[in-house]
Length: 319
Image (cartoon, rainbow, N blue to C red; front, side):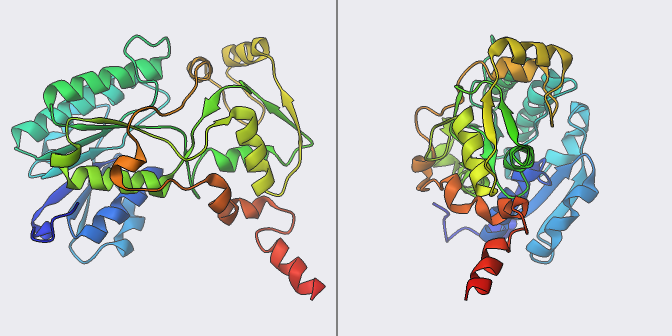
């Protein structure tokens, strides 16, 4: 719990990658507590939209390139807490997911920061055949070594209005046939706002959450096929779903292409295992997870014929 006796304005929380999809919601939660927020972004202009959400003097945006860990020192300087949200699917993943977070954790420890929250991924394992998962696992190991009381958060798929998950699948569902790779692989999608609340609470209360690892998922475990069907329904679409056999997915991954979206070899390897949370999750933060079906229509309605107001217009006409 946030201590009401603490002057939070005297504390600075650095959010690495705060201008991204998850970052915007994490920053909004932090603004509400009154802390000063320093957002570090490769392209600072991408984080300027946060300014109206913050009080005067509460937000600072600085430049950071996570492929150059040597640039982290001035970013971390003076931080009471650090939240690392940076992730990538291409490029030098070991540097972005392991070397840079480890350097950030070292600097935070040297500067006597009290809180460090590192966002990893379910399936993170240094021995994984996937470069993404192995680099995430190595990042966890190095962060914990540098900052033993760090909180590690491993989310499943994250959905929300600006995501690259539900919006992409909804766009693909407008076709008559919707091909689905790894149809039996299971996921536990989590709403970005629920995840952001957990991250902000973990950062604010290192005594309660420090030194622990949490796997964060939503209230539903869904196969890839079920997830596509749910998204299509929320988007007002009813395509014929076609399960693609594994050998087709394997060939597509080698070619680097899936109709409507890229598919790398590494992504295909990650699809070979379930992405379901285990152990303590949102309940540890006192958060009740939100189902996709209760809110997804708020942004996926734009894919309906006539747009998001189609059903409202139909009701008005009937009246």
